[in-house]
Image (cartoon, rainbow over the protein chains, first blue to last red):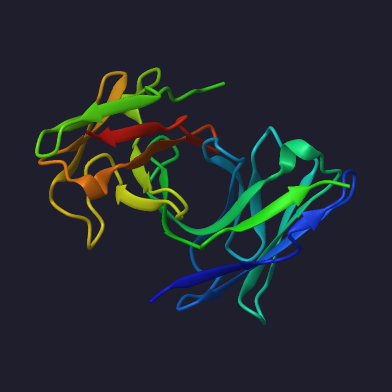
Length: 125
Length: 106
């Protein structure tokens, strides 16, 4: 059974860096894709980015330049860093296993089949 | 940029059929999946690749996708199905979510 668990500080000061980790059990992070998704209070889901195949990454254009996703294969973890945070970055942050299907770039599809419980991060001084 | 549009809310009576739509330009050319999110819980995948159900998802959940609209259908809706539902697709190397639909079972 695959399980994911987010961890990290629940409070971050404005202009600082938000850092979270996701520990995976039941699967290897060197397989599949691994995503971060966030949800501001009372709002919908927002994809942040994913890491795959030993360190390759893809990020949301809206966060590009502030976000880095990395991995630690020795711990079977992947991590999120979001720089220069503001109150707008206050959200529940989820990590999720992401599966890819399709055989060509015109038929690719991605879906998140296992999610962590989420961790709430508040940006405030 | 590509967008997925969902109605903010849908209401249904217990035992009836609920339909939740997700619209986007030529969405039928892409594969869509759907997530259910009950209050205070993480999202759960209920449909992927337009119409496939993951193991453990009841048969009353079904999906379709054609033209500009994907539809999540819940047959014989139960009180436990009251939740927010999000569609998701992939376009130009980006994972996209719809804004979500709150399903109320009256």
